[in-house]
Length: 360
Image 1 (tube, rainbow, N blue to C red):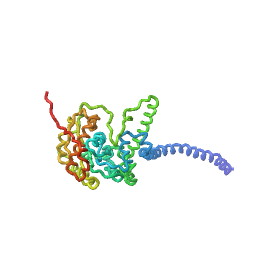
Image 2 (cartoon, helix red, strand yellow):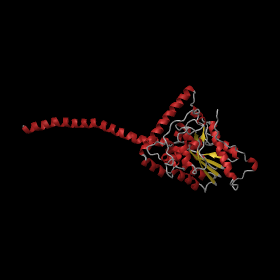
Image 3 (cartoon, rainbow, N blue to C red):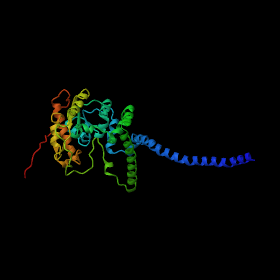
Image 4 (spheres, rainbow, N blue to C red):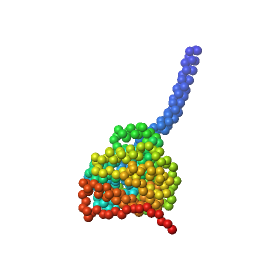
């Protein structure tokens, strides 16, 4: 009788225990799945958005005019340019190939990129161009005085998305993978950049289709690598961190020598120029002193009204900068007649610019 009661009791409690255990497992499963989803979604989203950022779709539906201009250079093939302009965005917005061509009689091309691209990819754009096109007679490398400072070539914990995009699109896969692994902070930031700007330009496109009002930036036309930002002329200089004279060691000279020696076998003449900056720039004197004897030209100061920000030029400002470069090219070529195949009639006289003080 006792054994029968024990068996009955066991039969009564066993299903309830099993049911309770099964219910607990069912309760835990959604929580585990949710936690896994929370972890996996970012891990999957980051590489997905990185792939989006380097895609042709993003280039045409999410990238700014600066990025599109940077990337278009990689499509140049079989070009025969006598004067090749390279450098940072001061050259993109400051040296008009049409002006240089007209004033020198030499076909001129502009393949300058932003400083973000230079910081991440080095001279990838220039090297690629020289592999695909005829070597120039004159290579003009123009950089802002800021880009002769070593700290501006260090991009850890800085997005520099434009440069990372070009590296992912046109650099070697092994180098791209290494950069992404060595710079996780920047890789995640690039994924956010690609996602954010894709959404931003999608909203802009919907706005345009609704209102037929196109943003001013979208109306910029890049001509032979050159364009002028649409911002109005500046009326004042913003304060800048003080640069101590001769405080940056040998980097400016080493950078200039790197271009001169590294590309002397691919261009008969290599000019490394410093871009003109506003006359009200706080560091004008320090930059002039630091770069004297290092760059192929001397640092020029121009009125702030020729700039639409601290380093980029208005349309009129770019004509002056372009004419200064044309005059420099003419002067150099006159000293090297063995590469100057222009007729005397095609060699224009370039007026000189002098700084004068006007007294009332």
